[in-house]
Amino acid sequence: MTMASAAPASPAPHPMLVAMVVSLAAFMEVLDTTITNVSLSHIAGSLAASQDESTWVLTSYLVANGIVLPLSGWLSGVMGRKNFFMLCIGGFTLASLACGMATSLPMLIVFRLLQGLAGGGLQPTQQAIIMDSFPLEKRGTAFAITGITMIVAPILGPTLGGYITDSYSWRWIFFMNIPVGALAFFLVGRLVEDPPHAKAKGLLSIDYIGLSLVALGLGAMQIVLDKGQEDDWFGSNFIIFFTVIGATCLISAVFWLLRQKDPIIDLALLKNRSFGMACLMIFSVGFALYGCSTLLPLLVQSQFGYDATLAGLVLSPGGFAVIFLMPVAGKLVNRIQSRYLIAFGMAATALGMWVTMHVTPQTDYAHFVVMRILQVVGLPFLFVPTSTMAFAAIPKEKSGKASALYSLMRNLGGSFGISILLSYLARHEQMRQTVLGANLYPSNPVYRDALAHTTAAIAGQGVPPMQAAAEAMGKMYQQLLSQSTILAYTDTFEFVSIVLLALAFVALMMPRNKVGKPPSPEAVAAH
Image (cartoon, rainbow, N blue to C red):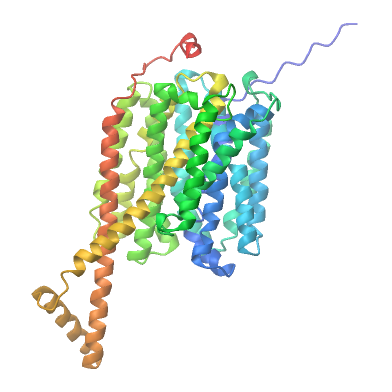
C-alpha cells in the first residue's frame, strides 16, 4: 500500500493582488483622517455640542493614531505581521460601527480614540507587506500603489464626507467602513502570508519605559499641534503644560531608545543616509498635502460660499490626476535617479502653490480646480521615488520598524503642516487687516468715493439716509475683512511655495541610487 503523495502547496497570489487587498484596508483608514473635516458642524449640531468641542472628534483620532504608528513594527514582531494587520482591520471596523451609533459627543470621542488606536497600524503594515511582496526591481510599481492610498485618500476624503453629510447623515461616514473592513478582513485572511522574518516572535520582554515615553510624548505633542492655534499657543497654560510634557518625554525617549538592544522604535535606522533624508522628504510631502488640503476647502467655504460637497469637488479632480500619474512615476523611478525625480516633484508642487497665491475675489470654480490639480501634480514624483529610496537598503527583518518610522514622519508632517499653516494664516489675516484698515480714513479720496457710491446705492433702495450710511460702512468693513482674509491665504500659499522650492535644492543633495537594476542582496545585507 503506497502512501498518498502530499497535496501540492497552493501557488502564492500575484503580488499586485496582495498589494490591492492590503491597500484597501489602508485606504479606508487614511480616508478617515480627513473625511470628517467638512462634517464637524453637522456632528456638533446633532450631538448638542459646540463647534470647538466637536474638533476633538479629529484630535482624538489623530492622537491615538500618532501613538500607535511608531509602535506598529514592534507589535507586528510580537504577534506576527498578518495577525496584527487583521487585528487592526477588525478593531477599526468595529470602532467605526460604534462611532456611527454614538449618542453623545463624549461617547463619539472615546470610539474615535479606539478607531485611531486600531487604525494606526494599518499604514506601516500595508507598506511592509507590499515591500516584501515585490522584488527590488519592481519596488517603484509597488510604491505607486501605496502612493495612491496615501495621497488620494486624504484628497477624496472631504469630497466624500461632504456628499454623504449633505445627502444622508454624518453617521454614514463611519457606517461605510463596515462592508469595506469586512471584505478587507476576509481577503487578507485568504491571500496574505507572513514570510519567515515576519512570523510572531512572542512577547519576550516589554520596554515599559520606552513605550510610556513615546506614547505620552507623541500624544502630548499631537494635542499641542491640534489645539495650539485655537488656544493662542503659549498664551495658554493648557498648551504650555502639554508642550513641557511632550518635549520632556520625547527627548528622554530618544536617549532611552538609542541605548536599547531591541527598541520599540529603531531610531538607528535614521543613520542610513538614504532612509534619513527620505524621511525628511516624506515629512515635507505630508506638510504640503495635508496642510493645503485643509486650506483650500476653508478658503472656498468661508470666502466664496461653497457648501461641503462643492468644496470637496474642488479637490477631487486633483485626486484623479494623481491616480493617472502614479504609474508614470513608478516606471520612471527605474530609469531616472530618485533625487532628480524628487527635486522635480518639489519644484512642480511649489509652482502649483505659487499659482494658487494669485486667487482673487473673482476666481471661479474652474480656476480653483486647475489650481488644485497644479498643487498635487508633483506629488507622485515625490512619494514613489522617496519611498523607493527609503527602503532600498533596509534589510527585510527591519522592514516593519522602518515602515512604522517612515509612516510616522509622513503623519507628523501632516500635523505640523495643518498647525503651522493655520497659525500663519491667522497672523497674516490680522496683519493684512491692519494694513488695509490704515487706508480707510475720511480724507482718502478712494475710500470717500467708494463710501459715497455704496451709500447712494443703498439709499436708492428706499433706505433712510442715516441708516444707508451705517449700512454702507458695514459693507465696507465686510469687504475689508474679506480682502484681508483672501490676501492672508495668498501669503500662506506663497510661504508653502518658498519652502518647497528650497527643499527641491535639498533633494539634489540626496545620495545617488543605481537605476536599471536593484542593489545586490549582499549590498542590502551589508547595510
